[in-house]
Image 1 (cartoon, helix red, strand yellow):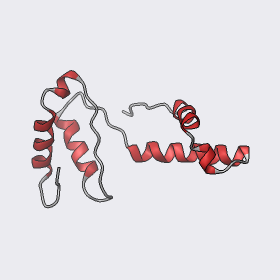
Image 2 (tube, rainbow, N blue to C red; image 1 turned 45 degrees about the vertical axis):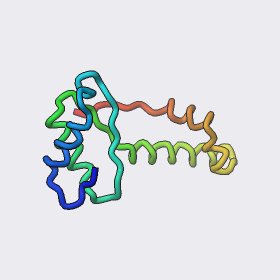
Image 3 (cartoon, one colour; image 1 turned 90 degrees about the vertical axis):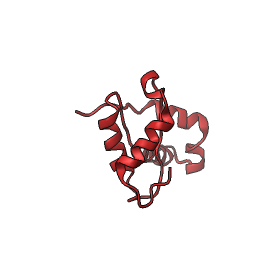
Length: 102
């Protein structure tokens, strides 16, 4: 979805139309873009329009995994590449718990 110069409701309408009946069935949707492009504004509005929506910030998730990986590398005296191997990442992801904030 191209967001440049568009109003948030117009963007959300396009997204909801593209989702079809997926929100009623259950789905995962991701938004990505540069800082300051309105992702947070769009997500907030989508949450208002789609009441069963749950949101989280992938940026926060990536920062948490990065912190865990760098801490592991420092504690074990290994380089970061070793701490970022798929099996290690799977373990690190298992250490995270997503909770809904009121």
